[in-house]
Image 1 (cartoon, rainbow, N blue to C red):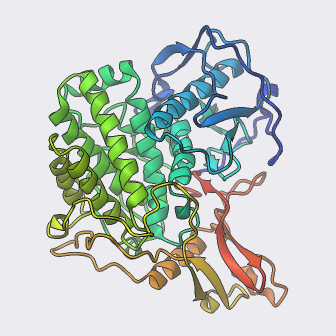
Image 2 (image 1 turned 60 degrees about the vertical axis):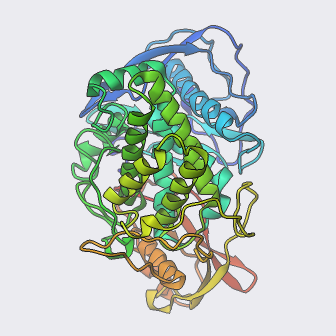
Image 3 (image 1 turned 30 degrees about the vertical axis):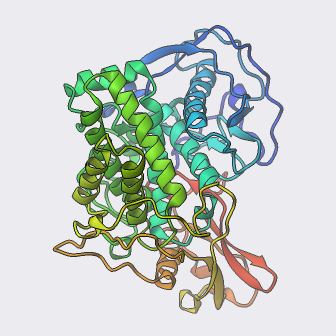
Length: 506
């Protein structure tokens, strides 16, 4: 995401808090009504035009998925505020967080945050067109574009995307450190899928989307256009970095490619290996699959909600069962079809999903016919969310000139349950890389995009080979990975999932 070009002092109630410290938040009364955004403060290619709704006063501290807004430490009186005020921003954020916690809490009974019993949230961590999750909590920012200050915490799309990272980290924690381009992109796709699924729990949004599309769900709409206002703000400085009318659109025609064959960065009209960019392949297939499920479920807004609930169950069940291997997309897809066959056999959902994954190349036509039935899982299946560390692999990195000869990485080296693969561009299947090749490509991609922090080894000056980013903010860190010393070894560890979208991305 682009660094804001004009400094603007945060208001008193949104002063950035110090990392690692959080004041005990006040507890608002569970009555009354507050105003919030239905989906995003922007509309298409404009920063304005969002639909306001009124919701019951959010209560964030209750289980499951308890949340605390730690900055600001005191909640304003719950009532109707005007957009543009600190008080409105607080309740817009709280409403979006509640939307997500209520939805995923029902879908994932017994699951708790990877960070602990409560997820801290910083409403305004500083100046940047950005938001991130760092296994401490959620951080939101403010940035200035074309004379307008944009707060990422106002958008339900952005909030539920970041919250989605924390949800996925809770149900599949081993993905956090995986040295895999495709796993990193899937984390971003899940964030967007979370924003879409939680949005579909809002009755007015469901009705508005069906009216906008004439009932043809697989069309661009206010639901598929994600983070319009934030996309507008980034577009003022980086016109090709995001889509023409939003940040990303879930209705797209992107076709799977081995991410190692893609450039590390590209305009929004093309695919790159950058996780936000490559995530659009899976998100597009997901959205098309959801549209197919909706056609089966019915034609009205309540049928659309039911399809979204069924999709959430299929998706999370598949994620828990999916093996972490090169070609992770195809494993999740195969497990989704398997889950649809076993748990929704009478609905016909499996065919809708299979068609969507083939059309986006995540599954080749031949591999999509792999046996999809309930097979007893071996120990590699992590269906409980219990933390599991992926195997460590020793990797030589002398060619990168970092002053370090070799490192340990967490490799995507499970044994795959399904013999499936993505489609090749002409015919047949893509041959997935070995996990060592996958890990080496991941390291090089981090270096190319300036996302790897390397310690000063004091051996020589070769650490000067680390790539920096001219657009990176100066007041907070945005690298996503570090080489951390553990005993005699350096280990590649993730420190945050930074959604400084595209320009200084993941």
